[in-house]
Image (cartoon, rainbow, N blue to C red; front, top):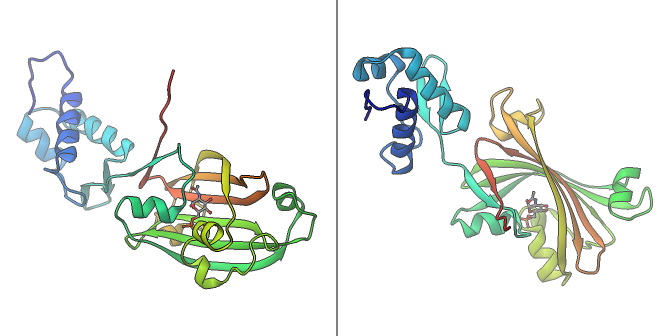
Length: 240
Ligand code: 16G
């Protein structure tokens, strides 16, 4: 696995070898990898060198450490393509996963100034505030809060909200979803979100805001979500 005569640093060789073992399935999610001491003895190199390789893979999210237990192989991150305007339900189904939602709140509230501006409504107009935990194969992936005009999206109820909003909007209401403006930034999970996402304190999340419009330009939704950074990776195709 390691060539000590090679000019390639040993930590880098070990990192590469571990990455390959994860990619080809020799090491599976949840597997405990040998300890720093075991690797150091086995490869006859310093523990510092081993630690550097492992730390790099931990920082990348391929491995995770558990106090007192050791270092384990992480679940592979879901790759989400950013080029299509898709729903959570569509994204999970296209991966062969089962989407589900836990409804935390479903209310009709008067729009505050900001929400009214975002949805091009007058202040205090009725809007739905929908908070959902989005799950894939029963694992929480994201926490999502959606705002939509109650006069535009008529007839919403808890059953619809527990499945797919986009399906209801397009198939039942016959509205055409056109485009969205989306931003992504990093953050630390908040105390309120942490238990819902099953994350430890201080874990990283990706904050996503999406402002979606119908084909005729009418604002459809304003959404704020926190995605688990240990489970998600966003991909973009770029051309020159
Ligand atoms: C995605 C969208 C969200 C939309 C939801 C509809 C992002 C960041 N967000 O989660 O804006 O409301 O899909 O999903 O992609 P649904 O049709 O499964 O309810």
